[in-house]
Length: 351
Image (cartoon, rainbow, N blue to C red; front, top):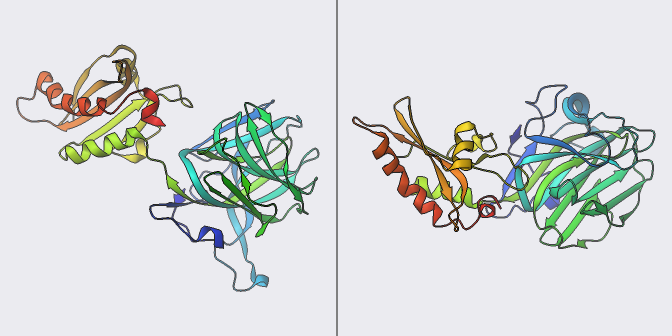
């Protein structure tokens, strides 16, 4: 579940104009299943982790009346339960809904078990499993460190020694502004601000190592949403053609090779896989026409600056007496042509 949040720490309270605020508290997720909207993968060797929502005693979301009045209750939390003892094994659970640039984030974590390792962290500006930053806490090593992974090669640790108790909730906070990266543990900035220009945007994810059993909850994120060209095309078309009943763009991307909805008049549909009709339009440039519930549907190819088909656009319009396939396509064609004038390459649509 994603909903509005209150500011948990001072660094999260200065919300930039136009910024979005999200909280992932998993209250609507099913127990003993992975949360929707996330992708489980792994860096290094071994299988992806076993990520599930389980009930656990966690601090209340409401601020305590006094430091001694901290209230805990049984709430759904995210748990990584795999006990793979492989050394170079880093389970990742990536939030797929947003790509973010500048952001501020806080999350609570608890180190629960692990013979080889007891670690928990947040990965950020994730490009893929081999390219990202992460900050992690180690209970056995008593360290809080920042790392960068480029092409699967992990850079040197930057951080400090700090005691991190097992079995209790800690708070990790991050702030990225441009090339500057800052991190806090339980309200303390453990190492000085860092500067790195390798990745300027990416996904957010949860990170563990080896056989670490770790829990996460109360993930609070403030960020400036990224608006892709595909989203702008849909937004502008709906503005220019207010009588449209629906509009969707289907395309593949670097991280998602299979075609999916990359922009829609209904934001909830974004990320849904393309059906065989849209796949055929992208693969062969076919045009499809149909009718449904008093509406006419036209699915047409979208071409880039070289004339190559890079996407499929589904236009939903109100039908009228005497509506034919020919005039339905004629109604949809100007919308597609306006879009094509702004698309140079496939990457333009989704990046």
